[in-house]
Every structure is written in C-alpha cells, then in structure tokens.
Length: 200
Image (cartoon, rainbow, N blue to C red; front, top):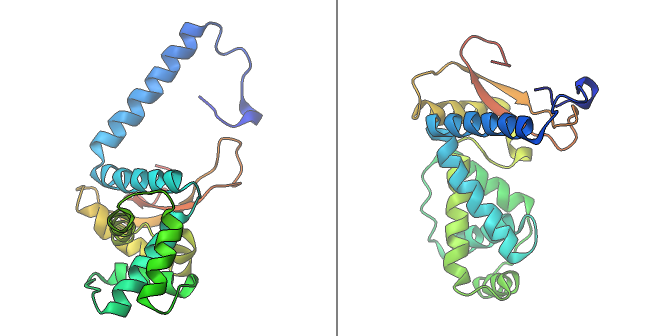
C-alpha cells in the first residue's frame, strides 16, 4: 500500500475489516522480518533500553549524557577496559562532543542531578552506556559520528550483520523516507545490498 500522500487512493478501505486485514498483514510481515534478522533483534534490545531510559529521566538524549559521565569517570579513574576499535572511536567522539566535569566527585554530582528520582542510577547508567557501546560495535553510532566516516561505519555494520546472516554483500547507505515522502526526520541507515540495488 502506498504511504506517500501524493499517491494515496481515497476509499481503498471501504470497511473496518478491510483496514484490519491490511494492518494485520503488515504486522505479520514486520514480525517475520524481525524474527529472521538477528541483527535487528540485537539492536531492538539496545534501542528499547535507551528509549526507556530517556523516558524515565524525562528528557530525550539523556542516555548520551549519562554515557558521557560514565565514560569520563572510567577514564579519569583508569577503569576503562574497552578494546573494540569502533566502541573506542564512539567513546572518543562522545567525549569530544559533550562537556563533562574534570573530577570524579563532580561527575558523581552530575550523575545524581541527571538521575533525579531514579534509584540505583549508577548501575542503570552503566547499563545504558553498555547498550550504546554495543550499538557502536554493531555499526549504529550516533548519526553525526556515522556521517563523519560512512566507509568506516558501513564496514563495521557489514561485519556485524554478517555475524547474523549468510547474505553478506556490499554496504550502501540509504536515506529512510518518512511517511510523508520527505526526508524530514529521516536518518541514513546502512543496508547490505548483495545485488547493488539500494532498494531491494
């Protein structure tokens, strides 16, 4: 069914039953696709944790603020143990992009302020940082970082997805068009394209 309003056909759903059948077929397709794609399943867990954290804190992007504080504290205390190159690049970028306090005590204070009413916040922030690290390790860092070196992050994405599938072709970046047919809030996502066709 076309989702672009310019090609929308009024009256294609003449009854509620027709609409429900169509929606059910779309749900079944999406569910089957997710179940067959191990990379999607792995990323879905990470995205849900990040969204849930931002929701609990009540501020979009708070997961990255938490990660900055955790990473800065690890580095200042000499406790950082990251060996994955992609995660290291992501963490370096994170510390370059965000401001953070220069002492462990000040970082602890910022963590308390960010967490607000959330109990056990240090463990939760550590968990969120691990999920964001995992996203970077799978080739899904923040969009600005991804755009800064598409070849590198496309390669990380390809290696990561090839762990989950036998269908490993070259990687291309595809702009996701939103439901209004524009690139409004769309983002660029890497896709494995075995035949060189970015749409299939």
